[in-house]
Image 1 (tube, helix red, strand yellow):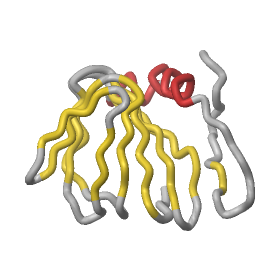
Image 2 (image 1 turned 180 degrees about the vertical axis):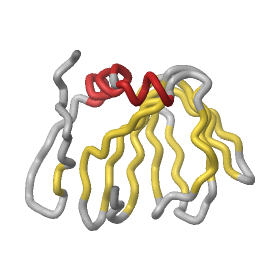
Image 3 (image 1 turned 45 degrees about the vertical axis):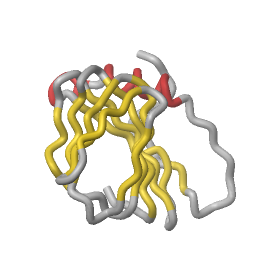
Length: 129
C-alpha cells in the first residue's frame, strides 16, 4: 500500500498558522485500496478543517452513486481524475479531470461516477465528522 497517509488520519487544523502540501493523487490511490472503497464503491478523507473551510478528498468506483443530499455550506467540487455526473433539480453536469462546479448549501445534489473517479470538495465553513 502507498504511504501518502496513515489511519487514523487527523485533518490539518486550518485555524493555526501553517503551510501543508498534499499528494492528492497518491492519497486518492490509497483510498481506492481501502476496504471501504471495495465494499461500498466510495471512500473519503477529510484533509483539512477550519472555521472558514473544509477540504475533503472523495473517490468513487465506476457506476457508484451518492444519493441526493445537501451540502452543509457553499461548496466547490474539483475533479482530479475520472468522470462524474453532478445532478441537481435543474442541472445535470458532466465533470471530467480539471473541471469543477460550485453550488450553495441549499442545493440538493447527487453524484454518479461514470468511471473510477477522484475529486476534491471544498466546503465553506466547518464540517463535523
